[in-house]
Image (tube, rainbow, N blue to C red; front, side, top):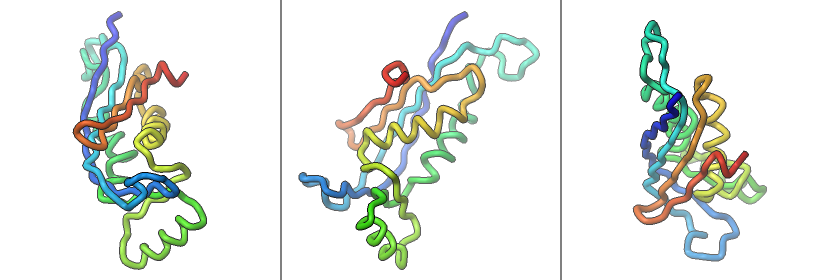
Length: 150
């Protein structure tokens, strides 16, 4: 049986704060993120199945990633949940609605681990999350690959 990889690209705009960081990115700043989600599986071979020849419907992948990542983070401000962070988030919430506090430093690397944990369990039976690539800029990205995380 032939295994095939499918990749779908997503984009979202988000700002983040890297609390305690010692470089320029310690300031609040944003990115036009580009997320590439790759899944792997064997195409359906049952001629009675409307998904014949597909590993997975791209629309289903779009819905899963949309719900787990894009809708949650698009035009949001992401920050780590710490005592100082929570006080800052509370102050911001009087003016802004889309503040997402996470239990990790919201780096590209940590965001990928979070995305993998959210996406993988939602995939259909027989389809596995193979890789994620998250671009912060046109020339900077991080990758998560399943075989590195078993």
